[in-house]
Length: 139
Ligand code: SF4
Image 1: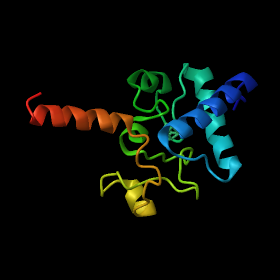
Image 2: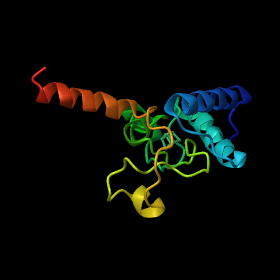
Image 3: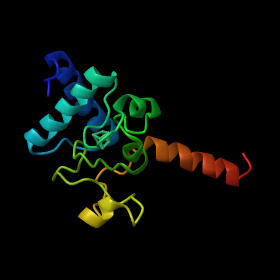
Image 4: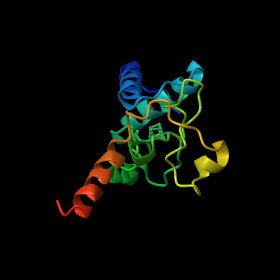
C-alpha cells in the first residue's frame, strides 16, 4: 500500500489535534494508535479526495465518500461522540460510549464510558435536540 504524502499526514495531524480540542476529547495516550489512524485518513484523501474513516471496509470507497457519513468526523462522532478508531477518546484512551444506543456494538465492547467533557462535541445531536424542542413547542 502506498504511503501518503507528508503534507497530507501533517494536515490530518493538525485536524486531529484541532477536532479533539473542539469536541472535548483527547488523542490516544499511545501515539502509535493515533499515527495509524491519521495515516489512514491521509491515505483516503489521496485515494478519494476525502478523509474517509480508515477503520471500515468499503466495497466502493469513492461512492462511500459521496455519502459523507464516514468522512471524519463521522456521523457517529457528531451524534454520539463515539470514535471506533480510537482517534478521539478519553484521556485514558477509551472511546466514549455513554450516548450510544444500548444495543450498539461499542456499548457491548466497552460498557458505559462516560464523557469527561459533556459540554463539548456532539454537534449533530445538539442540532437534532434543538429541532425536536422547537417542534414540540410549536416553534
Ligand atoms: S470513527 Fe469517525 S471520528 Fe473516528 S476516525 Fe473514524 S471517521 Fe473519524
